[in-house]
Amino acid sequence: MTESLLRLQEILYTSKNPTRRYLHCARRDWISRSIQAAGQLKTALEVGPGAGVYLPILKKQAEQVTASDIEPRYLDYVKEKWSHLAGLVYVIDDISHSSQAAHSFKLILCTEVIEHIADSQAALHSLKKLLADQGRLILSTPQRYSPLELTAKIAFLPGIIQIVRKIYDEEIIEAGHINLLTEKQLKQQLKNAGFLIETQYKCGLYIPFLAEFTGNFGLKLERYLEDKIRGTRFDFLLWTQCYVLRAKK
Image (cartoon, rainbow, N blue to C red; front, top):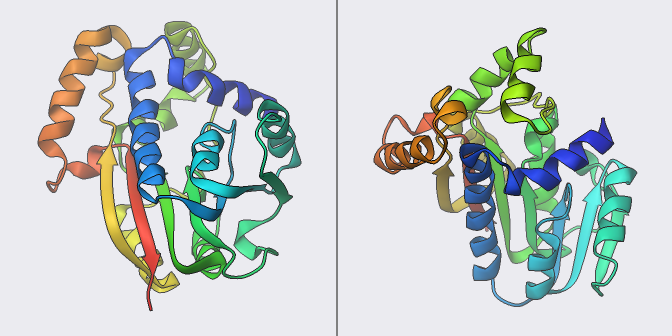
């Protein structure tokens, strides 16, 4: 499963399907801009780096970047992939009960991770503990009731997943989202953990069938509608919620 997930993460940003490619690139681009906006730093941490798309961007902003994951295979993968980058440190760590030193990082990146953790509240408390004074946490996670997450529950049913894989003609596997949160639920957990929201953003409208069968035309329509509903009471339909956070004083 780990190897399949790594292959999946490598192709998402270059998917042959315009909507699938956009959904991931829109999130990546917003997070990349948020990392760059943090300025030059001494220390940064990425929790759950996956295939390591953000590590080079983090390394441009920080003297030392730590990548942590509970799964050693992910760390082995990014260590080999980015072996030419100096100043990268790899740590096997459970973010729900982190063993890393408190207040160690000026910037922490945790993108598309907490939906894989049963106790996201514990993970957020741990992230708060690791954050240095005046530090920032960049966080993203899918929205519970977005069309993409709801459709995925159907797409992976026996018999249907074979059709989906034939339509996309590329890697399609279950992402292992065991803890999807609404905006309200996540904001309550952030408050409980002692975070304040500096910036928030939602992105990624997926419309079933339009995404699969109408190519760039469908994507153009999805992006138009995304812009219209962002910031309204209907923006729970957008796939990803993104935040830049700081700790309460």
